[in-house]
Image 1 (tube, rainbow, N blue to C red):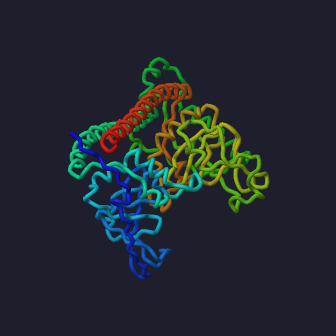
Image 2: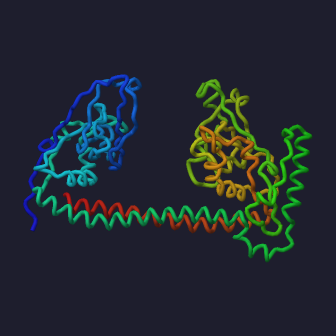
Image 3: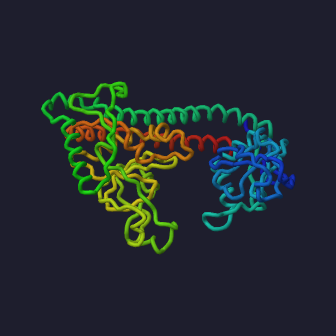
Length: 444
């Protein structure tokens, strides 16, 4: 039978801890981060005092309750673990000792993950919408109901049993997301290896082989060089049998990307943001435009430039295939629907033959995103794909009709993956609602 829950203010069991420290230039100090969404407290980094601007800080002790006065309403609070003992915190982080005769550390830690506590932090915060600060006095004067320590332990035992079920559900859903990601990658890999269209090839034995297409492209590129539209490039060595990881389907051919297209990198007017060059009526793409969604096509842009900035960048026609080539999000392709300019974080594939179906090559590049990120840019400080690395990448070239058949098959399979992902996302929402229900039952 449940006992009587007594009302307490936070100030009844939380006492602000302020252990001041004046940083010394020659000493190293542990600094702390508090993750939002109840992500916990951990070491941010270790820094020498000379590089830390704020010299007057405070010492954090393990076992203390600590929160960010800026992000508390987003769940930036937690119990300090042993690893952050003696770390330093600024006045933006508040550390508290708590009275174990009134509240247990486990009770406090779990209660702060509830919607009730988030709402308390929201109500006690003031300021502009995106920069609200927790008002300490209002926070500490807020009242909550608590059972005695003995009953807290009983409630915690029941809660931990139920939370294990919700934790298992969340782990299973995360596992499903991982499997779904692998499934998408497997679909792309089997597509570009011709495994998805084996039946199609059997039903269409008289299609012109890709080798004839490759010869036409070589002739076309020679004409472009002659017309001085592209530069002449050194011949690429043939792809040896040892370099080919598997046998291609009949009618397909191995080649490198540079053999079928011309790859160029963009540029940016300098200085960035200069109104002599920017905020005009000419679209100007940055990496974030290409990585904003998982869609095949890009239909919008964020930035623009003026005519005066054209000499520092490059303009390409609508329906150009593009690829991000620098930073942590390199290797992401897009087909841009509109005429545009673009910066040097993006490569474009220009003068592609009409017998190259761009959606197929979008999926080819998508299948290589991880390879581009992990292998092609290895050994460089900042991940970067220059046009030589991109151009020398091996691909498998099928005949045009099969390129179209592959895209049709891939899009159907990926649509099924989208449906599965929607279901998993809905289940994750239900699992979060279940956890909040368990928290309300236990701590409200």
